[in-house]
Amino acid sequence: MDANSSLFRLVHLRVLDLSDNDFNYSQIPSKIGELSQLKHLKLSLSFFSGEIPPQVSQLSKLLSLDLGFRATDNLLQLKLSSLKSIIQNSTKLETLYLSSVTISSNLPDTLTNLTSLKALSLYNSELYGEFPVGVFHLPNLEVLDLRSNPNLKGSLPEFQSSSLTKLGLDQTGFSGTLPVSIGKLTSLDTLTIPDCHFFGYIPSSLGNLTQLMQIDLRNNKFRGDPSASLANLTKLSVLDVALNEFTIETFSWVGKLSSLIALDISSVKIDSNIHYLLQISLS
Image (cartoon, rainbow, N blue to C red; front, side, top):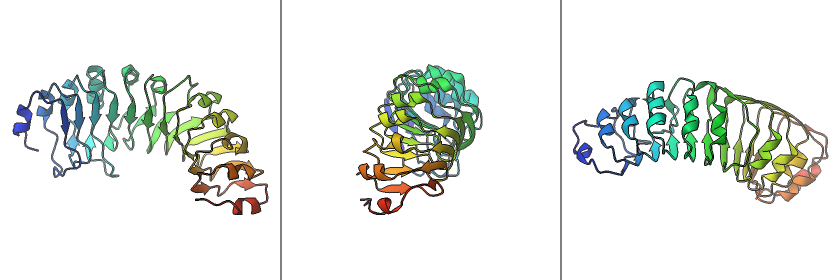
């Protein structure tokens, strides 16, 4: 993009959406910071590359910032100093999408100051260190996507009531047990935590999350029989408990999951007659 573009003369712009374009791997011009009235900036899937200019942090009125990409090759980089400035200056942010933006650092604790935040996506951002646990307690947070950050460590906190609807920790270094208080996340419809380091029993309180439509617990160290915890989740369409240390003694509960379209129980111990399971129709 040409830094001299007439676009940057539109100083009263509130919304700028350049997503799904091909800017041919050019850099985001530093003049973006001159659009000081912007409330919504969306540059996702636009083939920008290079360092995200620190001037983005001058957009103090932003409510949403989307610089994400879906490819495995991260085209954009964001310095930790710039991220800290965005957090410090854009305090009204409600959505922050930095998927496949290389950050290559730990996350600052000041992220917990974004009390208006509803959605945070840091998928595949090469994060490391300990995830600031206070983010889980942000009062308005609905979507938290930390997938594909294998060096990002953390554990699930003791939850209070929460507005979380989607929690994705796939392929991260998160570990520990699922707290009983996870049953307080009553708005949750998606819980994906495969390829992590979780262990222990599935708390029966998981059965309180009756809005759940997708659960992926694949490739952890969970054990015991999860049947009682899952039997009430009648909205489930996807259930993956493969590659754990579960011992499933009965499958009668699966018949209650009338919305189920995908079930993976491979590589778990089955102490039940599989005949009942074979009678279940996955629509």
